[in-house]
Amino acid sequence: MELFKKRKLLIVSFFFVITTILLGGCNVDISVDKEATTKAKNANEQKLLNSRAMKDDFTSQFLSINPKEKDYLTFTSGTKGYKMLFYNDAIAHDELLFKYEIHDKNFERIVITFEHKPDNLLVYQDMTYYDSKHLGANVDYLVGEMKEELKGEKIKHFEDDENEYYTGKIFKYDEKIPYSFFYAVIHSKKHDTKSVEFYGYGSCSDVDKTCNAKDERIEKHFNKIIRSFEF
Image (cartoon, rainbow, N blue to C red; front, side, top):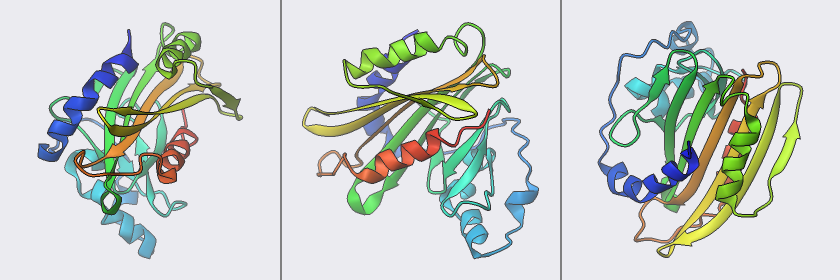
């Protein structure tokens, strides 16, 4: 499987369809605790309830209020295999090239996007979750895929009590359009068969206009998401 390469091939197509996407719901058994999503205890929670993410029918199925965060909600995987933070202005996709995929409790792939409109920035993240001896436990393979994409760029490895993290980034131009690419593998130390393959980039929402694809908010967001995974 060459997942990173397949995702890279979607980049050009993505810019042709993103402005015409019609978001809709689908019947996914998420079973998130809705008690936290219907009652706001303060102004911050009310803001989160009124956010773009919570107002989207498909996206909101995965989400609940995170009282410790100002601009982020809690995303619970459809597999129930992990949780992470989710930016309150982001949308999870389930259409066209970006169909949500879930297979039992062993596999999930989801694409998430949001914009910083005043700065013409689009942020895209594509995550694949594995819970298996063949891929989830095979960290060397997943990191090897990342190394191929980074083409010699440095990979950072660090860990905490819960997870191991492998991250790398690369910046380049494609047909004069700047892209900031970010890659990561997150592996659970408590559940050896569980890993997430994370691929993200930042670029211009409108490719006919300029943008700063090196904007520090892009990497800051990705780092926050990566460190938030709970398996």
